[in-house]
Image (cartoon, rainbow, N blue to C red):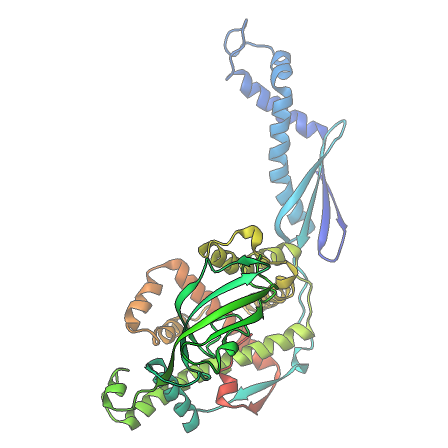
Length: 431
């Protein structure tokens, strides 16, 4: 077997493998001899047909089978010989030869990873604490969740709920299937397309209003995306929100038997757990961003393609549930490409750190992670049991914990300085 490798790009390789004709003939002879004992040929007793007859009838098929087997065996051998670590499956191309057998295998390899100079990276670690005003904000949100509505005889305002009947027309076509009756809209809740709710401010019950709004360019229905629509609205009623008092019944509804002070302490305790997780998540993201900028490794296209598919999957599943045709779903590849490249590159770096440092998952950390995740559920033990009852679910948590162990290692290598931020900033959505 002869092997040669051509570097066609930074990560792409073209490997050519040649097998001598004598190897082919040796394997063919053995296979044809075995075949002669198995097949039945008219005019000959079983096993008595001459080899030249067997070869004439089955030679081409047998040579094809041997070629396929040689690809399977020699490809692995050639990779070991050349010390190559391929990404995914290769593209195999047989090469026509008068004698012998030759093929090319095109594939990508994993990038070389070096973290030399990592100690020069500087990151800011966000620090924060739960203040009284943060607890007040949470209590107000809890009150809002239990709000009721009271009819008012005035013009509608921000945060009011209006009951309307409306129809919509775009480019001369009614898209609301006639008229939507008794539809409730909370002004400011952003449940409607941008501009719609704002047009409902300042209207009394019994009022009619016609206005135009432009659908977003990325709207789910392609026929309406980016189009101007005219809405004809009739206001049926206007209601204002009524927040409940913070009394014993209100507190008990959240599972607390005690005073307002007890309630606030319970909220603070929960917020501190969430804050700790949020601060860790932000530090992880900051550190990985700095790492990606310092070591911008090239991600193999095969892995980027897989990651793009993974990123697109939730959108596709949502479209299926909403019975939106996939052909109408606008999901251009470049929307996800940069994010996919980043995730793949960082995944390769973290895996390299885990491997080079011989890291093993901490089972105690896995248990505590699952227990922390279960605290937000009504029956935490059932959640813990759910994870431990399925090996694949448990492995997902193990992988996450192992990745976080690698991030801990990274943080220990870089220069870290503290930066105070507000609770609201700490809890803001991660990228």
